[in-house]
Image (cartoon, rainbow, N blue to C red; front, side, top):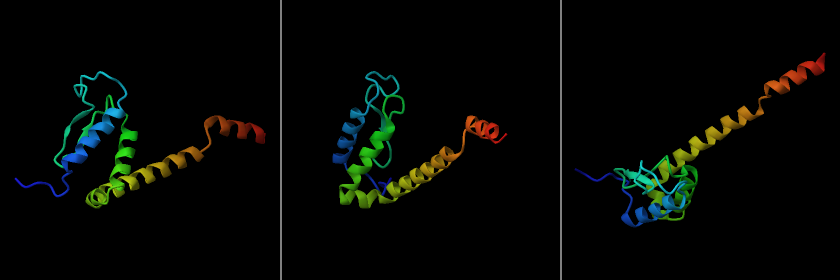
Length: 114
């Protein structure tokens, strides 16, 4: 069995565990057995527990950590850039939703025109 191409070195895995612990929402979790992560995937990366870990801050901190280390950024740049594109398109969709008037505003406009 061959190793995956983008396998995370062990020293960075320890740092990821610290990040996950820092962003836990609750102290006790039966889902992840109080570790803050469910396991480690084939790329040697943590899978954070969605029940007890605040996901967004962990991923933001992890991206900043990877970007600050050129060897890691080069290794994982495709997945980071892909994730940033998804985030940008989601933000654009949310912005478009925010620009639509609410039902109350439409009703007020309708009555104001009478």
